[in-house]
Image 1: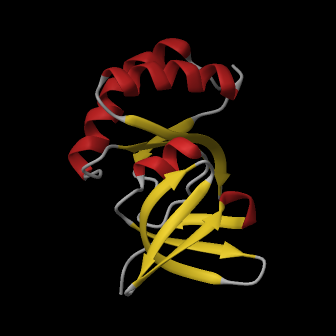
Image 2: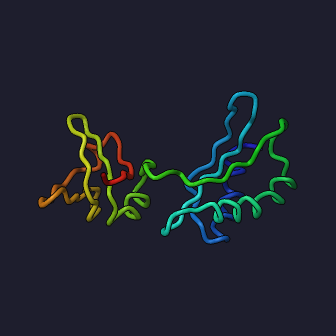
Amino acid sequence: MELSTLKKVITDHVIAAGYLLYDIEYVKERKTHILRVLIDKAEGIDIEDCMTVSDLLNPTLDELDPFTEDYSLEVSSPGAERKLRDASEITRAIGKFVHIETAVDKIEGELIAYQNQQLTLKIRNKTIEIAESECKLIRMAIKM
């Protein structure tokens, strides 16, 4: 089964359970194949959420039998410093601390607005705007 087809099936199940699907990946680590399902929700993800989604997906994956080799299902959070890959992810990050890299700078601050492909960050007592087109990387960050 193609990964894109499997992603659609998994997305439907994850959304029905009240979560967002950040991504799926099928990788080989050492000698083990892993289907990694990365989920998210506004309040964040905990181990209970991962177990809930895993229990939900297992019967469907058993029925579909999407891969010829044995694999393990791993459900987890995309991480505290996950990339913000598109407008919807950037919009959900408003009010949170982010890290941005441009060709000349690395900037961290609170994302306070995102409009017309412009990101507005509050850094200490000042506000700056950065065009999304200038950003090589936008990701969540942990405030130190």
